Amino acid sequence: AAEEGFDVEDVEGAIEEAGHGPLPVLAVVGRPNVGKSTLVNRIIGRREAVVEDKPGVTRDRVTYEAEWAGRRFKVVDTGGWEQDVLGIDASVAAQAEYAIEAADAVVFVVDSTVGATDTDEAVVKLLRRAGKPVVLCANKVDGPSGEADATALWSLGLGQPHPVSSLHGRGTGDMLDAVLEALPEAPAQTFGTALGGPRRIALIGRPNVGKSSLLNKVAREERVVVNELAGTTRDPVDELIELGGVTWKFVDTAGIRKRVHLQQGADYYASLRTAAAVEKAEVAVILIDASESISVQDQRIITMAVEAGRAIVVAYNKWDTLDEERRYYLEREIETEMQQVAWAPRVNVSATTGRHMEKLVPAIETALAGWETRVPTGRLNAFLGEIVAAHPHPIRGGKQPRILFGTQAGTKPPRFVLFASGFLEHGYRRFVERRLREEFGFEGTPIHISVRVRE
Ligand code: GDP
Ligand code: GDP
Image (cartoon, rainbow, N blue to C red):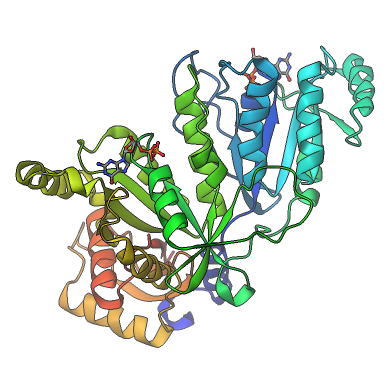
């Protein structure tokens, strides 16, 4: 490294930064208008993000990355709340439940100028049941005179209320320190068989693509392993199913099976549920209804799984309904609309007839193998050397940026750091990614490439 002009400390720092595994998840929950979105904006340090939403507009992003005191984590915002047929308490509880399920710690936001309401109490019950660490945010304490209102929230029985003004930033630092204490370094969910436990699959896709049909099909034909967790009174959220001789955990199956019909906010619930399932899973099986055009909603779900860095399999369902013409157009759509997961294993299935169900497990195994691939540094650098020699970066301003060396900093998904003598153009980075995939596989996994430029 030194002879290439990089400081050893810089190199080690870059590798450590790029090499992080899955990040722990913080959920922000509470009633409408208590200031959840305002707080999330504070935490992620971006103002434009979430508050401007108009009622009825579906928010498509619910998960954000954040950093505090040098630690990185994900924040699940539940501010896209809309009341539905369930009534206010049940609606708030339902949306909080998904977020809490996926979270390693929770910030419960209460409006201290209003005090604890019945709806707040309903969320407290949920939090008690979930047993996750909770940080109580007494929001809207804009000045010292509000401190007494915050103190009154001890009555919720959730420990110390942290007086905060999300609007002005008062107290947010202290509260975030408490959040970091509550939040584990890595997600509580273990990733990978080496750490024990079945691999976790999220079955995702927009409404009516056939998620529940597919789940029922595999659960009926294969053995549903009895969940041995005693004393749980709730519906099983995750289900153990034996497929191809291996036990898998299908996450958030209750969300798939329980067909809650919502008049409003259904899209938001669906987004939240998908985000939560993806966070809990190692591999996402994305279901697409092959009988219909691939939609913006399909793309949004794909983006969620890719950005979360999960292994991905794409299953085109309802294959039994396709005629020759639809098949022709589907292939054209896949070429144009499915670019962002062109590397994912594909299966053409029918939940109704059971067609190609046996191909699902090999596809999932392929994707997980790609997700866990580690390229030895020697092999990687031999390969990078060949690329640089055969396809050098175009000359810009009389200079030719060069990749000097690289390393794989992490897996699940694979993360690379390349060290270069100058700025690498987007097109060249894409080229390097394509060649990496050709050389080393990475089927079914997103890969991250970050580039450090020598000063
Ligand atoms: P959400 O529905 O829980 O996401 O709430 P929002 O973040 O949309 O906030 C609801 C309203 O409360 C907005 O008008 C915010 O400006 C206001 N608000 C949020 N935090 C504070 C605060 O700390 N102090 C005051 N005075 N107002 C706040
Ligand atoms: P979900 O909302 O994604 O869980 O979708 P469902 O499993 O409820 O399926 C929606 C509709 O599509 C139902 O009427 C199913 O019977 C139908 N469906 C699901 N899979 C298939 C399939 O492979 N072929 C056909 N023809 N219909 C299917």
